[in-house]
Image (cartoon, rainbow, N blue to C red; front, side, top):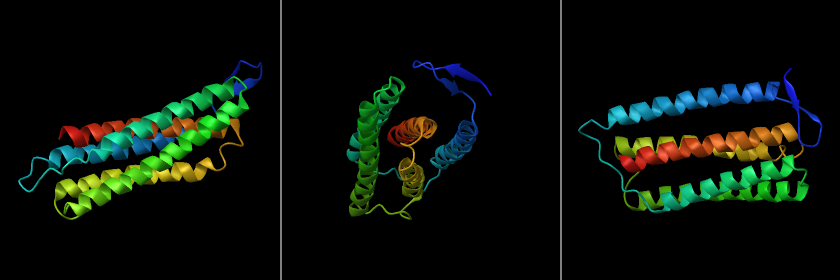
Length: 180
């Protein structure tokens, strides 16, 4: 066990089963997102590839997710300083913004469907729905787990790390979607 003294003098373990599990999970999720992103790039060269319109809502959703990550990081800092109220408020703000992002993504899907772009319209739309659904499922899973994270320092820290990972994953996916 590796540990250090935190700001309040208590010992905090660096390596725990939860952290190892999270990092293994993130490694697997990274490989899945990387494999799908690679397939997306390769598939773009096909003659049946027709790029989707990019709803402006995707930019708004991205900003919401970045704000969520910032709120959760603020909660992490507040918790480390012993500011329970600040940690709770940041946590709630981050979770609400994550949920708002999910609703925004569903709305973006509805916008595309109104424009005639469905899951099976062409390979571009199939990849868009697959990538955004996979990301959304991971985010939703995080929100479900969030219900019991606030009761444990370590679980809270793991939740914030997980949300930061999903924010980075979304920024990469968003860049891929926008730039292609």
